[in-house]
Length: 240
Image 1 (cartoon, rainbow, N blue to C red):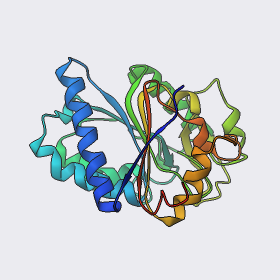
Image 2: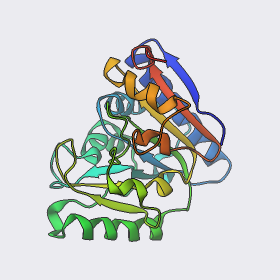
Image 3: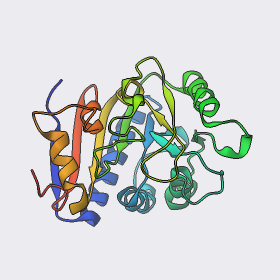
Image 4: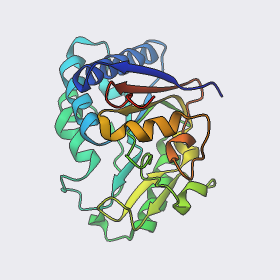
């Protein structure tokens, strides 16, 4: 495994524009090569900025969004119409506007299943519709170093025989979530960690330090098969 690449941009706006352009370029190249790329999105403030840039830049790109398969690294286990859902954020910002039709949301509470049953059901969806490898997985990083909904010290960090897991008692509300496991997240050609702001600087530094474990800083446990890149603004990179 090669060391992660680090790209530092002046501010959050420049970061979002750069990542959006890079994603569109990767997707266009994959489609030109005859592939139907699969990607995993993330949530959060910088992701919302990225998604709005994708909406702005997509019409000028060669990407056919109907031929992109869209997933998420994690999701809040709440009602389907909750604004807290990562999927709702992405649909509002760009997915509906660009014509993405192969969108696999993680289950909501609407179906009546508990979070464990919902995670198992989503795992079956991944096995049925997944290609076995993402083109790009995008992840935010929390101030505690968590990625997706894999939190420091939680038992899900040691699950290696599942695609998706239920999370209860999340240190961030809401308490119930569904998350892809390390094994699923790492089945990707490129893994991008995207971080903005001083509040993420300590976690970014811990994730990139030569010393440490994924139990303390879960971001240390994710990597791409061909590329792992940290896209940062100056504030998020300030402790490096």
